[in-house]
Structure formats: C-alpha cells, structure tokens
Image 1: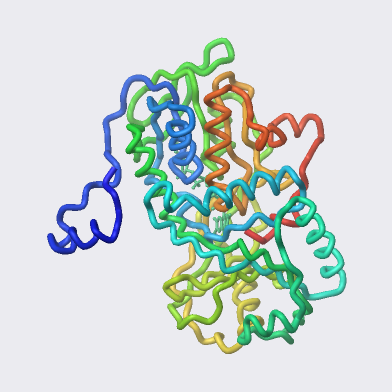
Image 2: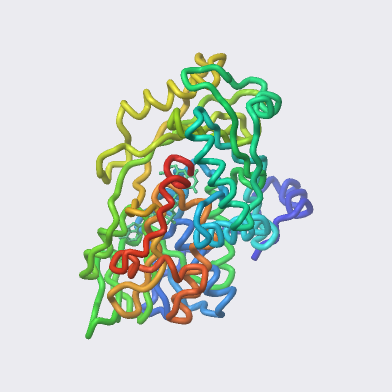
Length: 414
Ligand SMILES: Cc1cc2nc3c(=O)[nH]c(=O)nc-3n(C[C@H](O)[C@H](O)[C@H](O)COP(=O)(O)OP(=O)(O)OC[C@H]3O[C@@H](n4cnc5c(N)ncnc54)[C@H](O)[C@@H]3O)c2cc1C
C-alpha cells in the first residue's frame, strides 16, 4: 500500500501529482469467494478489512450496487460519540470510538477526527432530571461525561442564544465526542482492505441468493454469479429488501433522514450541539460550513430526498439557537435511507439462513459505530458465533423480548 506522509506529499508535488497510485483496484469478479460482503458502505468495507486483519481471511469480495460510500456513509453528518444508556450499547459504541481514535494511524489515512465535545442541551426541568439519570448511567458504564451549567455553556459558546423559544438551562458534554470525515472512513477502509487483496466491486448489485437446505451457497449479481458459503450483509436502508431476496423478513422500517450544509463561515464553535427540544443538531466543519441535522421524515420511504416540513423545522431551530446566522445561505441538502428498529439498537449476527450474517438497524446513528460494526460482523462471520460485544444485538431479541431501548440516546442525537 502506498504510504501517505509529508515526504510522499512533497515527492508527488514535485512531479505535479501525476504519480499517485490508485487507492484501490477495480478487479474483475471471480467465480467464487470464501466470503461475500453485500454493501460497500463503511460497515461492509470495515468488515472486509477486519476479516483480513483479525482473521486472515482475504478471499473476500465487497459488492456495491453503486459507488463505495454512496449510501449513508457518505451522507451522514459525521457525529461520533458513545453516550448511550445501557451497558451493552455503551461497551459497543465506546469500542467503536476507541478504534476511531487510532484508525488514522492504523490505516494511514487522515480521517480528520476532531474530538471537541458533544453537548446535549437541556431546555426544561424534566429534561434536566432525565439527563442527570443518563449522566449517572454513563458514569456507571465507564463513559466520561460532564454536567454543564447554563453559565458553562455561554462561556464555552458565547455566540449561542440562551433565551430562545426553549431557553438553555444546562447540558451534558462527552468531551471525546466529535466528528470524523465520513468519506475518509469509506475510502480509508477500502484502501486498507484492498491492500490485503480483497476485491472491491462497484456497480455490482446483488439480485438474489442461492440457498440449498437452508444454507447459502451462492450470490446472484448484476455482473454474474458467485459461489460462496458465507455472506455478510451491510446495506442499511435496503436490509429488508435484501432479506426478502433470501426468504426472511426483518423488523426494520426504512425512512429518509435529511441533512444540510451552509456556506463556509469563520470558526464559531468546535463542539457538536444537540437539542432534543428543538429537534436538531449542529456542528461546524473544518471548512467552516454549518452542518445541520434533525429528526426522521416520519413516514416510511426509499426516496433519497426529504420533505419541506422537516427542512422548515430544522432551519427554524438553527435560527433560534444562532439568530445572527439567519441570513447564512444553505449550500446543499440531501437525504439517506436509514434502517430503523423498534428499540433503536442494531442487529448484528446470524440470520435464519445458515452462512448468512447481517449488520443493520443502526437507523440514524450508525456512522459512529462503523469500526465496531465491521469488527463484530467480521468476528461473527469468521467464527460463526457473535463476539461478546454483539451477542445482545441478535435477531433473537425480537422473539425473547429482551430489547435494549436506546430511543433516548439515539433519537435525534446521531
Ligand atoms: C442524513 C444522515 C445523517 C446521519 N448522521 C449521522 C451521524 O451524525 N452520526 C452517526 O453515527 N450516524 C449518522 N447517520 C447514520 C449513518 O450514516 C448510518 O447508520 C451508517 O452510515 C450506515 O453505514 P452502512 O455501511 O451500514 O450503510 P451505507 O453506507 O448506506 O452502505 C450500504 C451500501 O449498500 C449498498 N447496497 C444496497 N443494496 C445493495 C444491493 N442489492 N447490492 C449491493 N449493494 C447494495 C448501497 O448502495 C450502500 O452503498 C446519518 C444518516 C443520514 C442519512
């Protein structure tokens, strides 16, 4: 793998940047693979990388219907954090955060990680009471987080409007929370997986599966047929569609989630701000753009564009929090199809088809989980059994009723 460093940058500058190697190959599809991963988003690519790195499995293909990172991985607002309520979630998301903290070095790719703090704003006494309980739960789970008074928030972000429609009474901050460059996660994992010899095949849609005696034996694609005994599925909003092709159903509903970025501004704040009352969250990118997000469009959809009502809601929240930015122009808006499950907790594990494993149900918040989602799916595929970190996230919980209800932590906080 070509090494990125200050020296390689200087060397390539001298040759007018004409000699950079391609970051990954575009190989032809082989007739068979030991493992086929469906979905070239962050989770699928990370799974391929950890299959090679942790389990020595390199006869692997990642099949992507469009282009890698063109799904939710390249559409999210890039917030990372691990401030969840239940121990199962805290362990999983904090493992992801720890992997993120070393990922840039590990894969020699600048993921532009900025851990400047994730602040959840409180606007009434009920929220304060509820969030104090969450704060205690985080501390019990070993996740560092601090209570901020209204004065602390004003001091930290002098530009924020403390006295809008919903006054700011305090907040909770996870200092290790922040943002990472979402495209870099897809590209970095792709480059690192490719270096192990893994085939990344773009423009290759999976159209069906060969299943004999309840076990998967092959994958049908728009570019031909592949024999394989192991399939890992990581297709987010299209999980139910893929499951149907394999003859089972999933408790997943797909919705559109939107995001917006403004024209670039000078640095105003570096934290990520989330307001449950306003139903929106904001950060400022390294380029200076305001990155805005809100809640789901509240009807199931596979359309990657959102509705006007949500746009108005998020924009009015933004103007309440930063009235002086009311004339800032929005540059782009887009939508992604997210996979929502009833308890807002992912599904990572076996499916009713032997040899087929799934990673889905991350809904509005799976970017922060990407390294752990890939790591645990790789473990499950390689060993045939879940790792301790994902054993509670099996499909079985929808039969046993042992839900992990993270709606409070996963609601609009991505
Ligand atoms: C607007 C928005 C904001 C968000 N903000 C955040 C945030 O701030 N923080 C956070 O943690 N999470 C956030 N999320 C959620 C997060 O983006 C996702 O949970 C996560 O990126 C899912 O990654 P993935 O790899 O599973 O899916 P994706 O990146 O969607 O990849 C799945 C891939 O599967 C491919 N595919 C589908 N069907 C097939 C097929 N039949 N054959 C082959 N390939 C197929 C798709 O083309 C796609 O590329 C946000 C999501 C959106 C839409």
